[in-house]
Image (tube, rainbow, N blue to C red; front, side):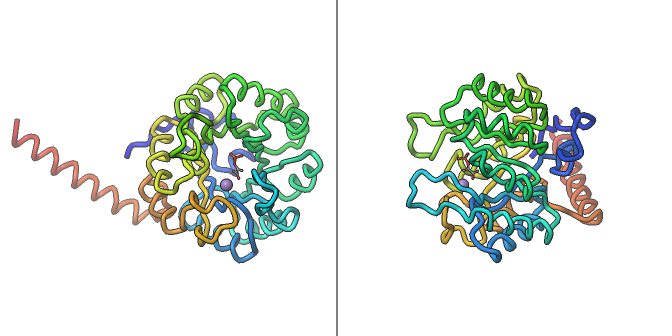
Length: 291
Ligand code: PEP
Ligand code: MN
């Protein structure tokens, strides 16, 4: 599949912190990892697997915004420590959610990127504080936010002096209930055009169903978005949150290969190019035979 690449035009503008995440490298940024950090072995297994598959950053929630207070709330500060250990083991920068201004210092001390969750997109005091933290921010779209509201929220961060904002489309609430949310690709494209900010898609929370992750990922990249955030868990069925939407490491590896984003050696790339040239030549010969 041809991925429309419009990431390179911004290369010069990206800060070092953004480039460490994979922005400006001429290929989509791939943030992958579990919904929640659950244990040392779980986050290390996830981090190692997504790194091997070609992810450019690790995600994992330590402070979790759960609809019910009875659900797993995340490991909190211990989860942050485990994320930092996973970064040390793999070299992947860490993206994690900050839910509250009270946690900002400790989250910023462990993370490379702060995530503002959908439910907090209009938590204006949090946006202002996060703007001052000096780290890139993933701003998820609120579940019922218009594009204008989403961009206005982003401005709270940029107005605080932090222009390293990454918008993330993660699905919106509509009348449709088959999917968890409705993936609003058109708004993601509009947000990118209007703001000039990088926009990524989170098909995991948009769809809520793992069988939809691959087609929605292809759609997002074909539409020119700058990257994806995908939930990957070593044992999704046993996950303490969002178990229906997380990919196994094997499925994530297949998706990365399908998107032409799997890491390859020069020899592997040459072999792939040779095969593609042979296919094209065969097709040309076939068409010339018909002309
Ligand atoms: C998440 O990414 O872990 C998350 C809770 O997502 P959202 O805020 O989009 O629901
Ligand atoms: Mn989740």
